[in-house]
Length: 226
Image (cartoon, rainbow, N blue to C red):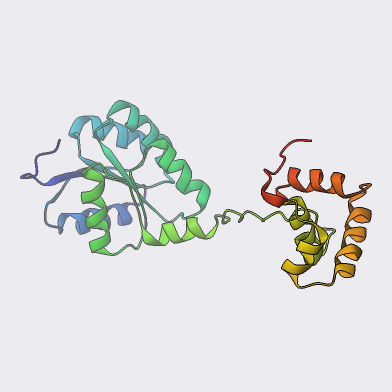
């Protein structure tokens, strides 16, 4: 573990000199951070990381000779204790996922505020995984929400009242009891039963009860197979 009494040692890898030096100047101004090396491409980042042994590498994505994702992948294999924090202009999902799969512990967009950069550096140096809010919002915005389960209604060809009648005869209730429970006339219950038998293609009450119980009516267990 990195001693908490010494500053976090950082290597900055970016192919644009102005951007690289700007990041180095910003980091040098932060309390508890020390810039120990710089690199203009992925190959230099690997070499300088092995020489300076930083705690954190601030890594750009698009660089010549070797891009930041490949450099991150090789760094993770060579120096697993070195945390990579990607700072880039690219926020597309594929780039974010590729960087994380390569071993990056943090992902920020260029233009992130000073406090956000410092917080992310401290977090990745401590072994945490951090994704800047702008990146997280972009990634979450492209994720499809999990579809909600659609409740299945047994015998959708029946009306709600017909299902109520079928449920009660599946419980073993006679027509008179069904009529009383549902506040219907006995003739109306008989008419509902005739319609139920026709719609379900059954010959009579017994077959209707068996079928109803197979589908969970009358307290039965729904039948899951053919």
